[in-house]
Length: 144
Image 1 (cartoon, one colour):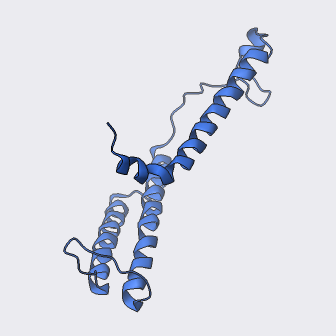
Image 2 (cartoon, rainbow, N blue to C red):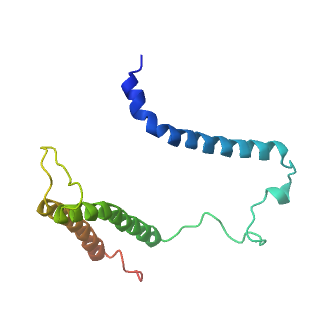
Image 3 (cartoon, helix red, strand yellow):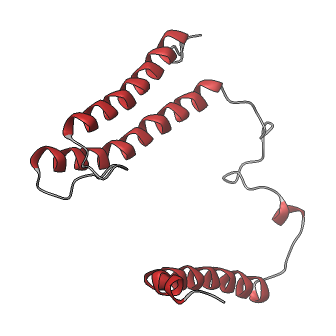
C-alpha cells in the first residue's frame, strides 16, 4: 500500500511528468506516421551517403588530432565551474548582506561568509591547479 503522504509530496511533479509523457508520445507518433505514410523507395543512389552532392573522396573514419578533444574537455571543465560558481555567488551575497535566507549547515547554524569564501577558494584553487598542470604539460601548445 502506498503512503498517501508520499503521493501528496509528488503532486507538484505530475504536470512535469505529464509534459514529458506527452513529448515522448508526440515524438513516437510523428515517427510512426512518417514511417507508415512515407515513401518506401530505395536503391543504390538513394541509400548512398550524401556529402553535399559530391562523391566521397576519402575515408570518413579519419583520425582527428587529440588537441581538439582536449580543448573541448577543458571548455567543459570551465563551463561546469561557472555552473557551480553562480549559486555560490548568490549564497555568498545572501550571507554577506543578510538579505535572503542563509545557507543552513548540518548542525543547524547558518554558514557565514568566511566559510563560503574558503569553500569556494578551495574549489577555485583546485581548478587553477588543474589549469596550471595542463599548461605545464603542454596542452595549449598547438605546434607539436
